[in-house]
Length: 512
Image 1 (cartoon, rainbow, N blue to C red):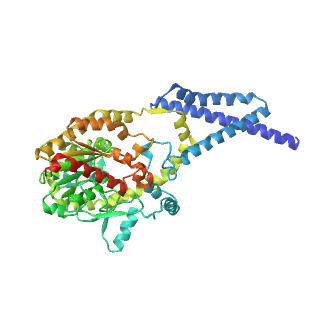
Image 2 (image 1 turned 180 degrees about the horizontal axis):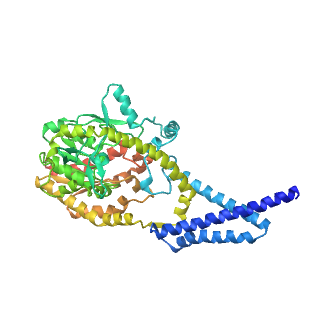
Image 3 (image 1 turned 180 degrees about the vertical axis):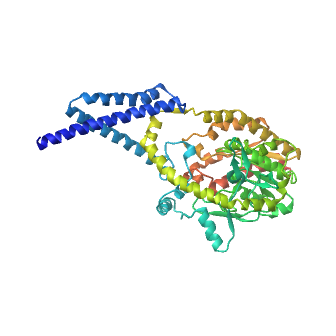
């Protein structure tokens, strides 16, 4: 056999093997889609999606196997065409995954995925393989130096400098433990009794967060909240604020949060916000701390991004659900010193969990990214619109629409009645999330009208911050680096200004 004949034979063999491999991969894709769909993991939104989803791999597999009967030259041309088409598809996938023009595209490889998978820019930096380069890119774009240290590194540096600091620990974010039966319990117990603290450790320098490039810390008060301690000693409170991390003060310096700015107008302002709080924890906080102060004004800061989702978690706690009873309280909350020691004892466990999660995420994110890329995930999500039909997701959505909303209605009714009983005034302050000013969908955006209608029907006055952010002209600039996260100092200022403007115009305030 001549050299030319051997070369031709190799090409024929290569074409035959290549087409067999390609046909097998197409058949496996069809089988994988079929098995996944029979398991109920997705439902298609249109018949064209069904045709593309099943028809494309099935037809391709049949054509490739049938092409084995073609002549050698035709098989080789078909293989070259198939490789070129596949390369083109993956080039499109690469562009959709890494170079989309969304607000987060410069710093995220998650474009085209759900909002739940989007992360704050500083979280992306923390997970980057080259933090220094990531930070340098941010500094060039936004003109702000970036502290790339982790929370653990900052705590260690401050402690070594003689400054005693602990990381923030909050009830729902750190102390809830899921049980095998789906319920949650608190990791804190006193004398064998379960206790759910409603704040963090008292009287401690506390490292809070870093979303804008700078780490924020504060000194907690004698109850574990973010206040100057003289508010508790004065025994007089005019304004009380309830809420989650936005109210707590994430992630701006002290004096620049919207509660601090309100306090500048009325010094007798008490901040009871705590990161991770949902409506049930907020009701518990109201019932435990405010009756002894009977403030004339209670500001209920509702964050549309996750408050109702947080409520679904809170309802899994039997102890928290007891707060829907008028006569329930936790007497052990008065044992602040014991609670503080119990929370501090949790720090090693929480640090170990954080370190393990970081290692696991680093390992899993690479595997997930490669797998998603191999499956053309971004491209398929644009071409094949599907509806999630996972049974757990369906159950969660049904609960969200019915039982969860009913509990939320009862919580707001009780809060309104409780504040009204001491002749106070409850205001519902509606805080918009980042997705509201993007094309991303979310539960918060979908339920806005229903939530506002529910509150309005209860007779609770509403202070809506969304129109104020829209009037600003560039609402995304009110979030760190224009991405998902808490408000910047400018955003906090707009919230405070609108709340104070509204309160000063109301009759009860004018009559004080």
